[in-house]
Amino acid sequence: MSRKFFGTDGVRGRVGTEPMTAPSVMKLGWAAGKVLASQGNSEVLIGKDTRISGYLFESALEAGLSSAGIDSRMLGPMPTPAVAYLTRTFRAAAGIVISASHNPYFDNGLKFFSGDGSKLPDDIELEIEAMMGEPMTTVDSAELGRASRVNDAAGRYIEFCKSTYPSGSRLGGLKIVVDSANGAAYDIARRVFEELGAEVIAIGNEPNGLNINKDCGATAPDNLRAHVLLERADVGVALDGDGDRLIMVDHRGDIVDGDEILYVLACARKQTGELNGGVIGTLMSNLGLEHALADMDIEFARAAVGDRYVLEMLNERGWVLGGESSGHIICLDRTTTGDAIVAALQVLAYMRESDTTLSALKSGMTRYPQMLLNVPMKARVNLDENPAVRDAVGKAEQALGDAGRVLLRPSGTEPVVRVMVEGRVANDVEKICNEVASAVGIALG
Image (tube, rainbow, N blue to C red; front, side, top):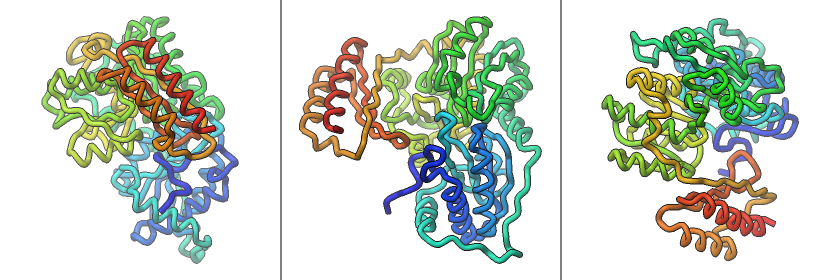
């Protein structure tokens, strides 16, 4: 069945255009409610980030769920991984996050979690898609769902995050700059690190509904880098708007991306015997990560791009550590989904236990030069069948040899094809990437 609403990470779009309109979100709430009700469940948690349209969609979602006879428990601004955790602890039927993650304020979306705190299974998403084609109805007035607020949601999640840090240890003596992207973790992130004893300089913690992810957070780490150097901090931590992506900065001001964070955590887990298998990355993961892990006899596998696919492969193999270059880091031995705060705490714990800087911990991995270009796509085109594109990719792969890669990938959230080239020499990578992107651009018209 083709999908009209769900993409690789829930439902997402520009506010005011389908599917992110009040009527469509209300019907999505109703459709999800009808599917859940058929399974005998009657309570859903709703969280959101700080973008202004959250008020609109929170009300619409609650109305749709209520009309299907489902109770809503409102969490207010809450990181995506917090909603996953609370859904599990409340034994709710599902959790829904109103967020467009790292996108600007004018976008929004819905992310769904099942009762165990993991991404909604494909078969349930397909049932909701099918239900969207049915006429919307309302249960009898006596059976309408009720809405209530969970007043201690933030405190519950903060205590959970702290519980993932080694018992009896603290962050005292560490100076940390925390950039919350003016998003869902704007208050929670600071409190977690402070309560564990760190000196925290908080930035990106003044949301106004319009400034989420704007020149701050995990998608714009230069702001964090400047503050780390200015404050002479030990480390910087940047989250994205919904708190599931992590990018760090070491004391030298070097940006530490998701691949390097995975490498550091793999080293830590191997040292303690907690690795339990290998590491899952994605098609976009840097070759330097793969080679560094191989040097330590750690198996590495690539999933399709998207944290849900990383999670699927982790579960299939029974492994616990995986993630993406963009900063989605999944530690299944600590939680059920990508969680920026939890992942940061694992890195900080390793720094503290080894009495080593983040700069030193990541030094065993050498990043290969990598270039990524987004080529606008007006309509879907099978690039594999285009002779000019095939020829350009073939020449690129021949020039790069065994120490490079070419990847063409249509985005799951934007109308673009991502062209990625990776190799040993930066100038060669840039030249080859531009050549391949030009061929793709011509093919896409």
